[in-house]
Amino acid sequence: MSTVGKYTKKPFSRRERRPPSHPPAPVQDNPVLVEIAQWLSQVRFRKSVIGGLDPEDVWKKLEELNALYEKALLAERVRSQLLRKPQEETDGYR
Image (cartoon, rainbow, N blue to C red; front, side, top):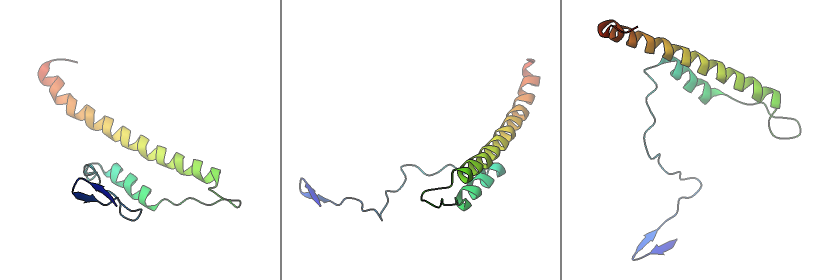
């Protein structure tokens, strides 16, 4: 422990993690983001014989994650176009 003025400051141990500075953004609005969050919580990497991770398995998992993010991006683009369409009609712009 270190002393700062008259107060004692206890550093965080490895087991005690600092609380996040801001709460995570809610992902319930977009079902694809919920799917990504579930995938990230369940993903497991295959270990290599010598040590570390199997590179082929890592690349496969990255491709799966990329496909999920592409799906989320497409859904967001469609949502954005649908939100913009009524505004363009009322403004007279195309």
